[in-house]
Amino acid sequence: LKVIQVPTTPYTDQKAGTSGLRKKVKVFRQPHYLENFVQSIFLSLTPEEYQGKALVIAGDGRFYNDVAIQIIINIAAANGVHDIYVGLDGIISTPAASALIRKLNEKNGADYCVGGILLTASHNPGGEDEDFGIKFNSKNGGPALEHLTNKIFEHSKTITSYPTLEAQVKVDISTVGKHSIGEGVSVYVIDTTEDYVELMRSLFDFESLKAFVNRPEFKMLFDGMHGASGPYAQKIFGTIFGLPETSLLRCNVLPDFGHGHPDPNLTYAEKLVKLMGVFAPSEDSPDFGAACDGDADRNMILGKNFFVTPSDSIAIIAANAKAIPYLRDGGVAGVSRSMPTSGALDRVAEKLSLPLYEVPTGWKFFGNLLDAGKITLCGEESFGTGSVHIREKDGLWAVLCWLSILAHANEGNTSGKLVSIQDIVTKHWQEFGRNYYQRYDYENLETADADKVFKQLEHEMPVFIAEGEGNTAVNFTYTDPVDGSVSANQGYIFRYGDGSRFVFRLSGTGSSGATIRIYLEKYARDGIDAKAEDALGEIAARALKACQIEGLTGRTKPTVIT
Ligand code: VG1
Ligand code: CO
Image (cartoon, rainbow, N blue to C red; front, side):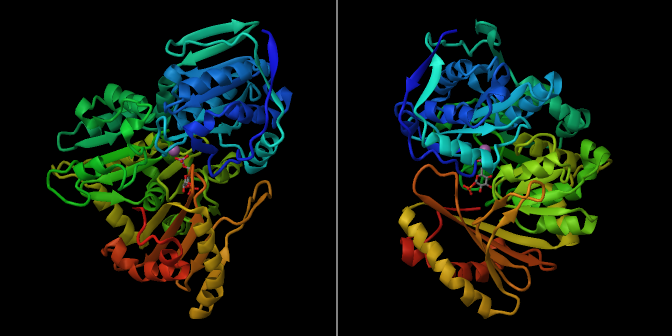
């Protein structure tokens, strides 16, 4: 294989956000833009880590995936990577990629697979005029830690050339099998649904779940949002559980997600939300509904006429671990949530005497805790839930957890009326109290306006502190208990004496402008039946006053409320 060095000039904007580099497709199409970033990944590793080793290239199926995969195959081979794993048609969901990296290293020795390059912009829209994304996951299957993403950024600013194959190869990724590209270098095109299904089968009781979902009084809907979860969902819910095709919505992967915004929330999964009767209750609504995002790591859980907040979801999974076979058998060592995620999980941890860790936003921060065995379950308010089985959040895993909890709650129930998702959540609130919760997103603001909002918040901190006994206001800094690394500037927390709070953060996943997120939370031991927006009314008003967002940005209301 003859390798050539291609001269290039650096870009200055390749700094990873919360989860990799996300930009418009047209940005990635600039000369050498993708190549520079990919080579910067290699430059940030030592040659011993990848030469003669394996690399996974995953993708969520979005526009430009196919082109990018071929470019990366050529650069990886030129860098001396020996075995390259690519998904059939280029598709490997983010959780399946994490699982694959881990499995390759379990099977072939821990240093076999250096990690994976994941081509995804997750829940961001796809298509020629929309977003593309790329991130590196390390050999534990988890997103690269900050010291590594910082290194990649540094290299991207100084890169002068990258290697690639003189005779560019183009691998047929539509056929499963081993494609030799010369001198022992191979591209393995694999269908990862098999491996992923086997992993799920090892965690859950598929037999009892199958029996449960086929009960005549039970009806469920799954919405793949035309993202990467589709093929996996079809296999588990369709082929194995035998659900009818009418239960599986949008499970075909489309490069533009059918012009949709593949983010499973109350705004963007609008059709499912309607069918489930969340805003217009009906006796005929199905019993269970779920959706995943573009790369299948996020999940939304719905019951009959009911929405489960992600913050409650992780708390309830933790509280019901006995309903989930591998958690029942293996136990739960500890739990973790991202800072803006509600304290519902804290209540469970307290009651069950489990260690609880509060980390900054972004799944990478759970990695060390999971690797060190300090936690078993973790979650984020942004529809992310996961466990120690991989190092990414896992949408379908969360759906299987909830089906297990439902099945368990209905064991021996022959009344003809199922214990519902709402019953389970209500019972949880009765036992632990309720953390009312809402998130306001102000998307795509002018960056300068967003800066003004944060300046204003700094002025407001002492005002808020003086306002009430026990009030605090801080800019969140995290020290990783495993490696001692410090991450500063992770969001402004305004906390009342009773633990209620509002939090401000700048999003790190957008591809243009700035997005401000406001997180509102109020804990109620009793009085659990209010509407979230009512219970949070006062806190919302105080938060809006604190940030003056309307005056400073001209926005009269959030783009999305979840
Ligand atoms: C958002 C969420 C965060 C999540 C991240 C990646 O980040 O808030 O909780 O980990 O997306 O999720 P930000 O910086 O925009 O708030 V995904 O499914 O896009 O990988
Ligand atoms: Co995602």
